[in-house]
Structure formats: C-alpha cells, structure tokens
Length: 498
Image 1: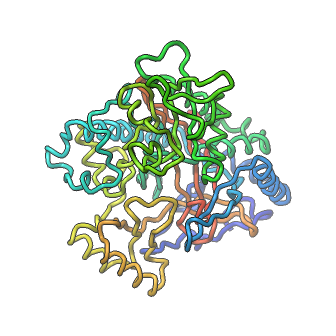
Image 2: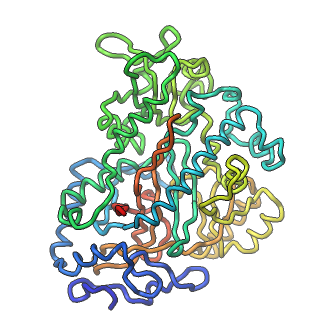
Image 3: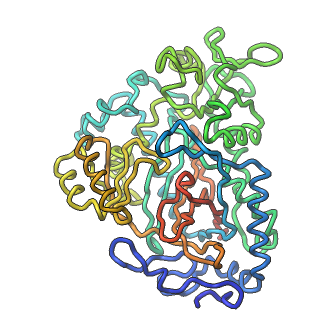
C-alpha cells in the first residue's frame, strides 16, 4: 500500500506502476515519482486527501457527473464503421487534479512560446518566399503534395502576420523533467471549454482545496481570448471591433464549445446562413440589418469556409469570404491554410523548423518519427510494426491509428497492407511510457495515463499561455489512448504559484 489514505481508499500496488508496454521500464507517476516518494507539488493535496472519507469522494464524483450533465457538456462520437453515424456522450471527468509546479510550468511555457512563434514564422514563409525550402531544410513535396497547403493563401499576410491565433500543443511526460510534444494543433484546437468547466466544477465542489493551494487561475481565458482576437483586427477597423464565432451548427461534435465561448466572450455565435458579403465586408444578420464583422473566430474547416473558392456545395461557410480576407477586409482566426502545421509529416521536421526561424535549439523535444513515404523508414516500420504507434498524417481524435504493442496479429497484418498500399498517408513513432496520475476508480485510486493540451493565444502584441490547459486521461487500465472519442476523460490541471 502506497497512498497514505490506504485505510480508506485502496491504493494501487507498486507493481502496477512498473508496466511498460514496450520494455518494462518503470513508469513515472506524477504524484509518487519513480520511487514512491511523494513529490513536492502534491504535498498539500495529499494532506487533504489523508483526512477525506471515501464515501464523500465517491459522492463528489457522482455530483461532478451530475453537474456536467446539467451543463450539457457533451461531445459526439462517430461510429467506426460509418462516420456519418454519431452518438452524443457525456465527457467523463475525474475529481483528482493533475498538479504542476511553478518551476515545471516555467520551463514548459518557455518551450511552448518558442514553438508557437516558430510555427507562425513557418506559415508566413511557406506562403511567401519559402526560404526554408530554398535552404534545403524542408522538401518541397511536403507542400505541393499536401492537401492542407492552400495555394490561394500565397502572398496573403494576415493582420499582424498572425496565422495561428489559438494553438493547442499536445504534450506527454515520461519523467520528472522529460516532456515531449506529441502534436501541434494549429487549425481549430478544441477542448478549452472542458478546461474551464473542469475548474469551475472543482471550485464548486472543493473550495477548501483552493484556499489551501495557490493555484493559478484559468477562468479568465474567455476575456483573454476576446482581447487577443480584438488586437488582430484589419487596418480599417474603427473603435470597438466586432468579433463573432462561426460554427458549423448544432450537429458538430464541438458545438457545445462554440456556443460556450461565444457566450463567455459576449459575442455573437453565427452560422454560414447568418452571413453575407456586403460592400466588400463580411456582415452578419441582426435585427437592425447587416453588421460588418472585423474578426471571425471560425470553427469551420478550410474546405467548407467559402463555396466560391473551395467546396462549391458547402452550406457552412460564406461565399466570397476568402476574397474579402485577401483584400484585408476581415481577420479569420485561425487563418486559412494553417492546417499544414497540424500535418504529422511536417511535425517530424519541427526541430529543424524551430532552429531555422529562431536560431535556437528546440526547448521541447519531438517524439522520434518515421515518415512512411520514405522507403527506408517504411521498411523499418513494417519490420517493427508490433512495437510502434502508427498514425494518419491528417488524422485526429484517435481515429485511424494503430497501437502496435496492444494490437492483435490480425490487426497488425491488416494495417501492414494499408501501409504498403498508401505509405505516404502514415507516420510512425515509438511507444513512449506516458506518465500516470492517480485517478478515482470504483476500486479507489489507480494510476492512469495522461497527456496535456495547453492553450496559447497569439496576437501582434505577444503570446499568452493559459497556466495549465486540458489534461486528458485514459480511463481504461493500461490504455494510453486519452481521446474522449476513444473512451478517455479529463482532469482539472493545476499550475501552482511560486
């Protein structure tokens, strides 16, 4: 028994923390470290946990689920067989927080800012002079053969040269000072509403914890988001800028978040049919006629944002909005064409990208990545498929991926055929030992794997990183898949004051 609360809650045995799916190396638990010694960041929390009754914690866990249901915090899960079929689910929430020290966060935030600045510089470059290609540091094929690269954006400079106004950087931890960037989300990163609702729920249920622990706030994010967007207005904007959130509609999996953010920012939530181009500006319908929009926070993918320039049958966007954008009549956040920075093949070049644009070595590591479109890499991946994680280059949400160490021989054989048929569609990475955080289960506290998505706001005046972000947790024992669409849940993330 390891937890000091073992007389009340069953603690997880040390052996459970020793399981590594690849090489049986000891996993790192963020509360108990490698050697079952309580880590400093969790000291106050553990003192509180020692005197808590199990029955009260179970009641609080049930209450949290009730609060989430009352708030309507749901997401849509698509069927594996037919992505047109979907099921609306309540996102699971765990009441045991994930705690990060001020020192750890200082290091992380510095690395995150470096990465985000490099991504913005990269996007400006590839849509202008393409110096990184001319230098030989990035193959031109990664642009010309990439569906996320938009030739219509060539020569376009957004206000303040900001392409990625809102960024989500997915991080994993493997040791006390070992953090890796797993993915860059530069298109339309989601999950911030869960971060905010997680904190609001914890404040409501455990106010004593926040009086005992100096936890940095995240609840000012909507205000910071509005201010950041308002600083990115087109040159002709007068007085108070008009900001709106563009949503695909109620059937979108993240609709709750779209409406949540619009409400918290105090701006209009609009759909494509609410908008039209009037006198060279994008305007929204109001009870007093059409009103011009200065900044549109869009949650609609590039392909559907403008039927005149992209998918002609789209009803989700606005006909002619790209032409208005190119003329400087509106700011679109995030800018069209930023999705190429989400590309997992581009991700594999991020160390070179960071060094090229900043002149510095990356402060945050990349996960080693094999690009399956390269014959030598493909050969290695096929030979070691059972030890690797394989992902679609443009995949998201945990769909279309293979986790080799947990796959059956039949699944491996099936995926091997897919790789041979279309190798350029995939990248592969080693199976890393994600850190664990104690999580409330029916049997008591147990270790569960986690990742972290900090949210970053970018404006011409600087970079603002919300302290903490969204911790996603793999609720199934032994699972490393944290996506909510694959059965994962969320935790409140605490970043402590100095």
